[in-house]
Image (cartoon, rainbow, N blue to C red; front, side, top):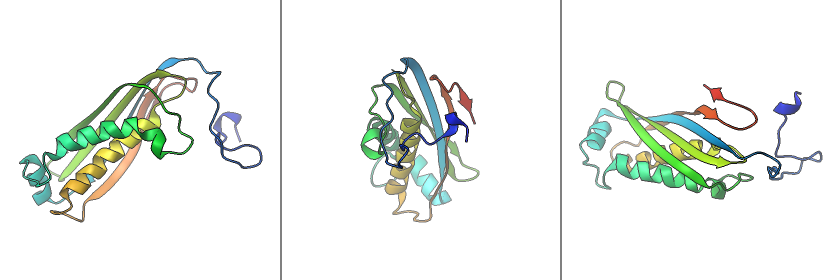
Length: 160
């Protein structure tokens, strides 16, 4: 196995540990993740009409996603706590397919990347949409959550 592709959170005995990043340079790091939630036409109409009883779904989900980026290290074992310089959640509405596409971008200047923060942010935003709309549609489907890009750090840039 390529040394750069080995699992980095296990020692030679198989014990889990947090990777030491103290030797790494501080660089600007940006990551974006996306995912979507498919729902009934009725549910999407209620979201767009702001008639869901729990409130303005997209605004609440946007705030929840940003909060999720900031709490990533509390949720993911071995994930370093980061000082984010920016986190943004945006939505695109696909009315034809009755789907909401969420995108989360996280930014920091640090010694480790923000991929997990972007992925957590988009996941929390989508889960919030599900939670707020489940009274209208329990068959909603969260799908295709993935990293779309990242910049900075030793491993360089990545685009999906």
